[in-house]
View 1 (tube, rainbow, N blue to C red):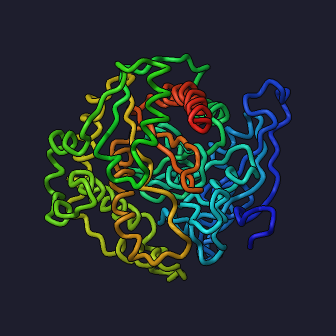
View 2: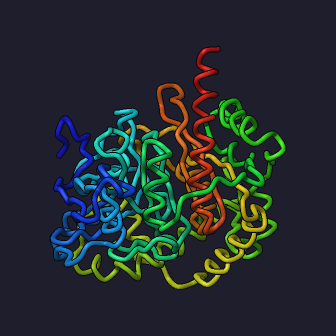
View 3: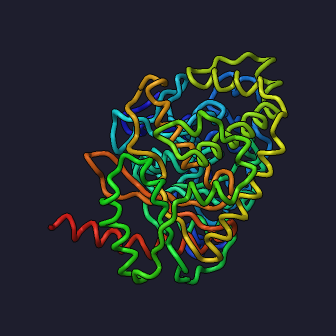
Length: 433
């Protein structure tokens, strides 16, 4: 339950200190504190997966996840485990069992999930950084809703050992921070990178059609982010792309999912809606393979929205799964060709500010459909993506995302550090106008 000081972010608080040698001052994360989503193994504790029945039916971990160990060895101190959406199966951030962590930017809005507590702990200044997981959007969404940085790395580049699987084709370990420098320091440890050398992006491609899915005025992004980019790198680096058309042309296997429904929706981009359909089908299939036996045996008490999603997953067959894998390969090749080594794609992270708490799920359908269209670009390609918070708009947090090719995580981290200083300058200058 929430105490007045912790925003309901924690399932359990404890202290895990770094090993004593070498001397702490020399370590990259010396004196930083962090929190861990309740999906990671920590020796002596049960990873609860957001659900009391899961916690009750699973033993304490006998070892600690390698990612958590790496952070401790780098000098950081872990202060506890954070609340998450049940079985990682929601991007909302509401949990009927453990309470919904309170969004530090907007108390009447959802914090985003499934790494809700991890994002809230950072946004509410309870820790310096935190780790979560991102399968369908579970780091990117809460980062956007809580007004902080969130990084989803290239798929398969950071170990997911000691992490409860959701859907292995998409599962990644991601992290949150309030500023790009700490985001980068944590990233260098998790990605095992040397010092990052700044590289000028060859192009920054604005996906104009994706911005039409967002309720945030494009001219706001235009005035702040694009001006910052022009001042840093010159106008020649900026390009525009109708991403939906590019994906439709270059990912032929998507035709299988281009249903009439995906074509007809006025609020959507048909090829990205189809991408989302393929991603969610493969996610359901893998979730079923991972957890059907436990769900059938234990019959856990699952909250609204989650119970329906889990039931759907359990009905999934292997039909069209091979096509989903083809789409993954085709999309990765297509976006690699579009971006090259050092190109970047700019998209909205989510379709707008965080929805209000306890919004009727049917009212969120359009929003969710748009969200997954945007989130599936990186989900399916396996590329890396960073959420960059902008200033508040109508007293609500808004953000944009930058996307880079698979394996360009270090380049993307360094780019955010460079660009964010200029974004802050632009925001300050425009607030004086």
